[in-house]
Length: 412
Image 1 (cartoon, rainbow, N blue to C red):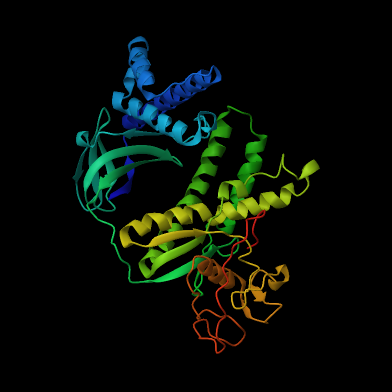
Image 2 (cartoon, helix red, strand yellow):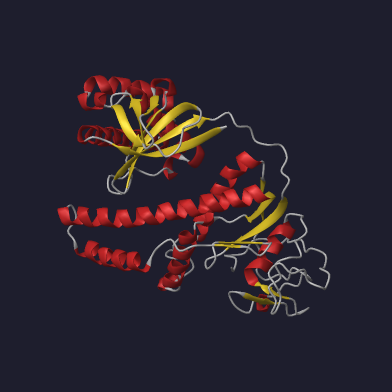
């Protein structure tokens, strides 16, 4: 099984300068090749990796600055571009902006990479043209190295090894199925009544980031103060991103270790977080409200949680199922009655037909589990005076199969 191992680099001043040069060269190759592909498409022709790789070899003979980076690193950039264009379309692939894109480049030849452990805390890797680079030894790579990616984020350099660890995905899992409702108040709620959430940004970081945004708005483009402000903002957001990645990874590992099937809503997060400008919100109506919803969705990391669950499921044999998200928050899991008034508030769900009470997110998670053809568990009923793990006295009704078409943004 292919897996990733990420470590923080400790580069010398000369190595950091070379790594930045390699990243800038790869960015220029990406943008030039992308513009060439788009120009060919405008004329009704096609351009792919093979002729571009040949033209890159000719360009290296004419332009000396291209020869500073290893040849296989530049060829890998063209391969990544070719894959992106085939997957998303030539005109949907993004440019690599100097201001917004984090520098990165990949060494695809694992046989040219040597890794050694120096002591308990440090190791080193030998990379083409960069030589021996030191990194913090947080864990053993545990496998054959296939490739290595060097990247810069929030002022720090990192190296990520793609490793063949020899682990096979188990065929069976002894756990039980579970449904997960992703929300803007609680990141993930399970059908068993468990809540997974944490704060990713402290109040002090929010205040400092807001002040930095104000300072950035007043700074002049291209100035040294603007670069310092952007660096400070990147440091704050880097810590926030690391906390979110840590939370999603831990949550994904817990869920896949306990459950054989994880049922999620088939949410199009990219479409759901699109700006309200240019849509049906004419004259700027509901733009601010939609922007607040977008920030809440992105802050909870809905898509990243799904990726973390899928990644962890490879090691446990857990099956990930996606279901239609329509009306999961408005349907009573006990009787199947659908009514927008069933959900009294963000946390309270009271069925207007049978009077069933439950936590709104837990009820939605049970509906998600039922939509995949699994019976919702009896535990987790959060009615007044009842324990979270208490079995309800009244029998459950037949699980309601959700067969509605998605209309707009589901309520959570």
